Each structure stands twice: as C-alpha cells, then as structure tokens.
Length: 296
Ligand code: PAF
Image (cartoon, rainbow, N blue to C red; front, top):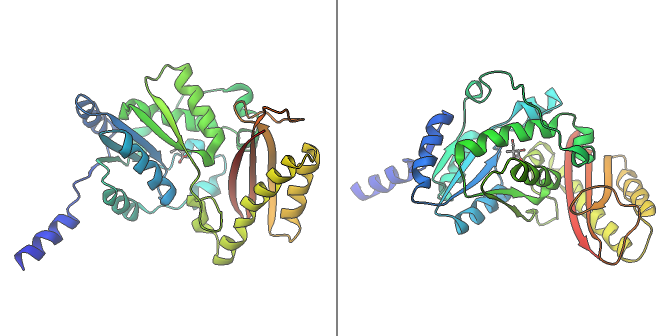
C-alpha cells in the first residue's frame, strides 16, 4: 500500500515547473542556462503529436526543454477564430510532463501585454503573400510574441514546425535581423495516417470532416506529380482549386507555387528550382493550411 501510494504521489506530483509570471520563468531559464543548453518550443496549446515531435527533437539536442502555452490575441485578425481556438490546459500539461519537459510558461495575458504594443514589424514581401496577405497583422502579432518569449526563455535553440512554413521564414528573418543568438530548427510536418497535417484546429472538425480534410494533402501530392510531369504552373493552380471545391465542401483561400526560400509565387520552373506548394482552405468553417516542398 505504501509503495502504491508513493507511485501515485510521484505520478501526480508534477516535477515539471509551471510558471504564470514571465519574470520568474526568465529567472529559471537564466539560472538553468548557466549549466545547461535550453531547447524552447513556443505553442498556443491544444497540443498534439506534432507539438510532441518538436519537444522530442528539442530534448534530443539540448539538456533541458522549456515550452510556452499562450493563445496570443495579437496574431488573430478574426475575433471569432480567437474565441474558438481550443484551450486544453490540463491535458497539455499532462502531455508535456509525460515527455519530460522541464518547465512550462503559461503567462497571465496581463503580464504579457502590460501596455499596448507600440512597436510593429514589417517583413516586406515575405509577409505580402499567403498568410500575411489574408490575415492582416498576423505576422506582426507573431513577431511581437515570439520576441518576448525568446527574451524570457533565453534558449540555445528554438523549434518550429514546417506546417507553418511562412511563420518559419518570418521567425528566421526576425532572428537574423535582431541578432538573436540562437538557431531555429524547422521540423517536418507531422501527419495523421490519412495524410492530414496535424493541427490544433483539426479538433474543430467533425469525424467526417477529418476524413474529408485529408484531400488537402492529396491535392498537394497531385499538384507535385503534375508539375513533375511538366504541366504549366497556371494549369496546376487551376486544377487544385477546381478539384478541391468540386463537392462544395472546401473553399480554397489560396494555393501558391512559390520559391522555397522567398515564398514569392513562381511563374515558371527551372531545373534547380526549390519549390514550396502552399495551401489554405476552409472546411466546415475551419481554416486549414498545409504545404510540401519539391526540388527539381
Ligand atoms: O505557431 C504557433 O503556435 C504560434 O504562432 C506561436 C509561434 C506559438 C506564436 O504565438
């Protein structure tokens, strides 16, 4: 009985540290950073296997791993989207504890934005396309919050998923331009068996919606095949929207065939082109994004 009790206590007693006050999290990271390398995974919670893959990668490359959970109002241009964003704090903490995460910051929003942010970021052409074009102010919000989080976590490496490819490019630019002293590690998109890219937003889909949503990835693979077969870019773009929208389930917001680095739309392909195929589409009023990379 005593042993059982001890196991029970050990299981339910978080050894992971949870911080609500950014300055206390910062003090923990500064102190830990003296003797350990820190891998940092910023998230908005509603965690899934994709987030855990980032945590695992961070664990394999650093002595300690710290995670943030914060649904950042500044990066939502649509108040309804912000309201509906899934929030699953206790499940998230249990998942992170099970992965052996050392510390989590779940900041009190009032302490994140103590005063309205006067600073604003402009990433030029990089944010004039795709997510930046359709979600006004989104990347400014991302840049503001990740800058704050980077200061608080003082990491050696930060981990982002390729599913948000444009966010990866924006944050890489931020790190370069503001001389943050660490690297961004971009991890491959984690997919369901069906091919659907894992996303916190998938929770808002019905069971049939989840099955239908796999067509997004399929449409990217079809587009890749067509490009490799030599079909012109304009033709491939037309077919993706036509095929996804034919049953009336999807509304394609954009499908772009872009340069892999600059994310600017391409008109033609060359033999050494590195290309990203990027899509955003609505299904059951949920906005889903995905992308794949191809080298010619
Ligand atoms: O990708 C996300 O979950 C968010 O954009 C991030 C990087 C945590 C900033 O709020």
